Length: 274
Image 1: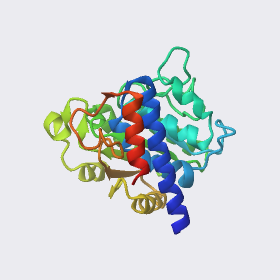
Image 2: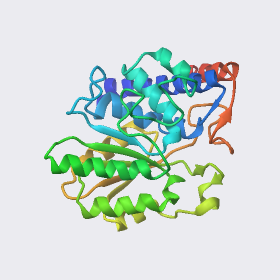
Image 3: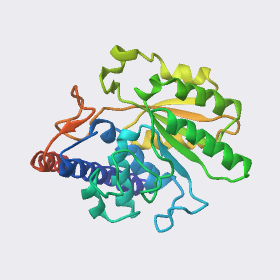
């Protein structure tokens, strides 16, 4: 990746973070922690890796993205608005009456959403089904999907993992947002998931572990994943929950937080000062 591209993606990641903070601040509360930890990934995917056409969200040739950890919807919306799928003003309507941007992503309501986020684990399973369908149709599209570390407590995630390996879904690149925290506390205290990389490798996946906030490292991992010919790929991203939001980054109880626009503006100013 050349320096110009890298600088552009870093700038877009910061823009997505600022939009997310403002979006949730305007509502007054929301899932800030797990949204901020995947902003770098979404900037890289939407601005460099995925084949997409914001003017034609249902373009058959597009790559698909399923964010299975559905509570991260606000950052997905910020990325989509930034990329031009819909007006930035829509972000002010997050989770309000009549909105096209509900708390959890809905493919019927929002341009650019490829799969509705339901119960944790469901999106991941749906992504595997989408990948199988594309493979059966002989289409070259890739399916990208993001699963949470707390979400990985769900047995459905591992059933889908077995299915993908058995079917040789080499058109899948998955990411675990391993930010070490979930709704009720630290993952290691709620239900320790141990060595995720070893688990996914044992399930038959090509597995890599990276710094989820290092754009270049992520980019190399995605390239290596795409080179696989007979197995799905999992990229375990070591991330920081709340990354880039000064009052949420790395603190406890940051899964969902209440804050007003004054606090949001202070956090945005702190990001601008970096």
